[in-house]
Length: 57
Image (cartoon, rainbow, N blue to C red; front, top):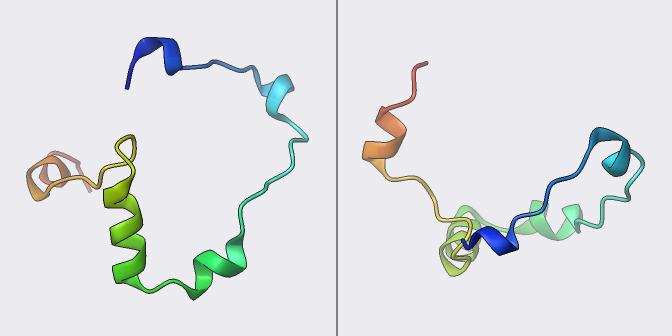
């Protein structure tokens, strides 16, 4: 992701925004569908097992 694509907002600016996510469509997706969708988005790649292992539980 390039720095010029990053935007910052204050809490006041985002409060009251409408959630346009189609949650019904998301809820109907299988795990495989969700994974394929994430893989297709270069800005939302799933973490690798190595990256996940760095988190403390």
